[in-house]
Image (cartoon, rainbow, N blue to C red):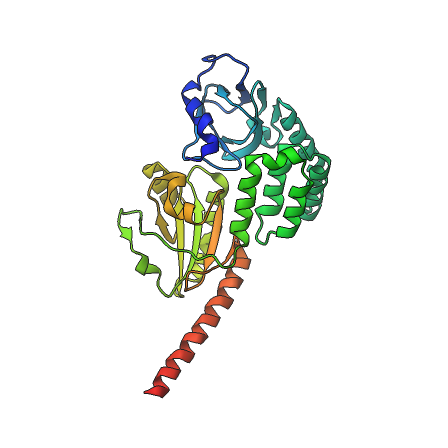
Length: 353
């Protein structure tokens, strides 16, 4: 489990309404009409832990209390609708969520200075349709709020978690943050992720892991093949959507030397198998049920999902987080070039004979 979330998960036993009192408690209450009896979940925005905090909902109402020492960016997930909402939890803050299922995009989430800052940013982009304009607005927010943890979140969402992150631009943004923010552990995590994404010399060393039948897939299975490795989890909506988007690419390259490996960070075998079966997900699915402690997550320094790596036949990572047509075009060029090279080698061998 990630160290920064240890205090949070030591407090999981305290997630009962009214079970604790004190100045470092974060209190969350919600009332969403039409939600009925279901479950909402909390997990970290910057580093998703091995498990999530599940909060029961009764007739649309829910509540929990968490002991926190510092501001903790998190994500609230409505399990029934698979919609996510960034929340900025902090000690001593009472956060309230109100709304109804007919207008889930307009939920009211209030409580704490950071949440107010994020809400103001969200309002500022509500009328924007161009992603370029949204990024410009995010950049403007970061400049105006150098001491806000929301700025770190916006750097990650709009500038790091993109197919081709501009390392120089991101480093400039980080430098614009106030001095005390540079000591924030989220900054080091953001920089680690950026270094992982922009590395061109990194090699992917596929570990032997069990597939859906429990059979351990040997590392020899990846020999002389391009590897598309995607990290996901059955409880994470965005990563499931990305798994869906991969299906057309998987079918297109079914007869070519490309192996699509979907590595789940699930800890629940049945939930993992159910998601694969219900959504008819193709490719090779692996999971050792260790969550973030799975060897490949550590080796690649993966800190967010969904994350995708493309490696060539020697295991060298070509690029990361490329999806759809961009991914298909890249694979087409890489595979075609490799196949031509193989033919040349075969012809050269025949001539020598």
